[in-house]
Amino acid sequence: MAINIGCSHNPYAAANKTYRREVKSLAAVLKAQPAPDSLPPAYWVGTTNFGLRKPNFVIIHHTAQNSCEQTLAAFTRQASQVSAHYVICKNGTIHHMLNDYLRAWHAGVSQWGGNSDINSSSIGIEIDNNGNEPFTEEQITSLMRLLRKLKKDYSIPAHHFIGHSDIAPGRKVDPSRYFPWQRLAAGGYGLWYSDTTGSQIPENFNAVQALRIVGYNCKDSLAAMSAFKLHFVPTDTSRTFTDANRKILYAVLQACP
Image (cartoon, rainbow, N blue to C red; front, side, top):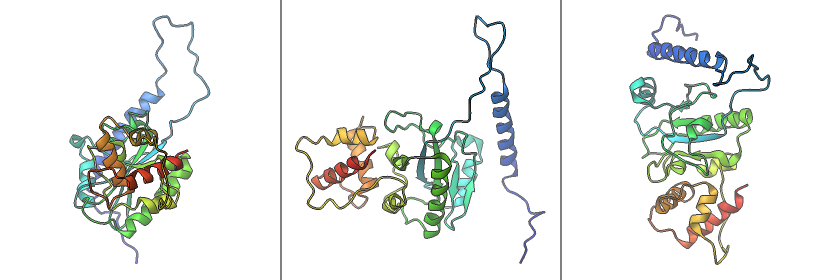
């Protein structure tokens, strides 16, 4: 059955108009000839070798809201000052809200390895979830399909698929303990570890240094340990970092490229 949507009202028409205006403004910036310095040469020389900057990370979030509509409303309200490239609703619908080459405002104050401007090098994906419930199968199926495309389009390394809690330990806890990181890693999106039963770690193993090598900001080492556990041992909600945790960390460290 065909559905006529030609005359239907788009509740985001005003936001879409703002999007087009902002993109037009940015396009004008790109078209502008680089300004000469204080001692300009006789003529301007433009290089012929350039391209758009490509994203190198994918950051996964949960929305911490109770509906997709709430999130879409927030991301289309300029006063909110937050956005993401993609929003995935509970029924698996994917809203592509921003061109992948543009900079969304999703990561906030964050760091991964030596990168302290995550927004400038990443794609942000928000999944409709309040943080206290499992993700739907439709969401994960759509997410896996999207990740496959992003990895192919931008050659994003497997270990660059991470969560908001990973890049902002102590400040963020998304995408929550319900998120299936092991399933993603099996598909090539993120790191995981094999069975650590009976494994041994070196006597001089330094957990904080290992976390730093993996990518965590260890300014607050306890927060970094909690963020690691949320990702790799979500069933362990204790505040201690056990020998079992160290074995898992060592295995993840070995999996790092």
